[in-house]
Length: 193
Image (cartoon, rainbow, N blue to C red; front, top):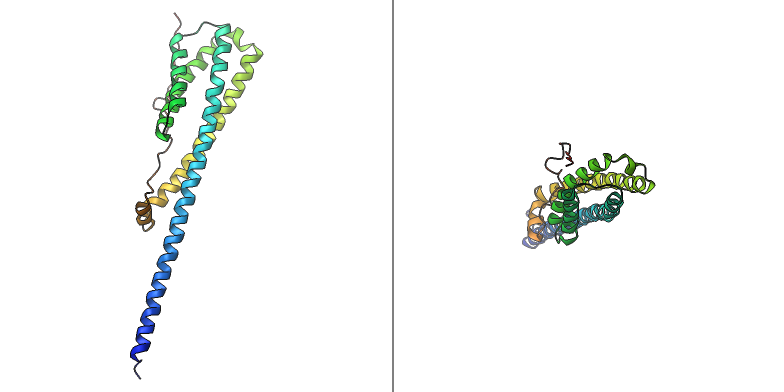
């Protein structure tokens, strides 16, 4: 016996509704996944910013402590100050990453310079500030690692098919990794006149 024409229409309607329901559920869960992943990246970035801000707040105290006990290269001091100013004035995430990377070599030179002054290393204020700075450097390394891991997860999410379609539709684009500073593998050199 053949199904009646009305039953065919109903079956077709159920199939169409089922497909539409699956599509709506896919859109809903896919979009929510993108939102969640992007928010996780933003939260990880906030941790990176917090640790860099801590570093930039500590550096002037460290520099002032050293200035009181030693005469060190003016160029190094200027580089550290300029890097801090760039960080504070940076508007976008990319500008902040660039400013933070610009501080790495100047800070390394500053720390190498400090090692040349035994009387400075003996002062409690210097030791305290240096310990805080070392702790901050560790926190920065962890925050950067966590941020990069969240960026990796997010980027995979927005680049994989079929979610790639949703990502493009809703304007989700891959994020930038926080890479190592070029030349960071080389030890800084300090020359006194």
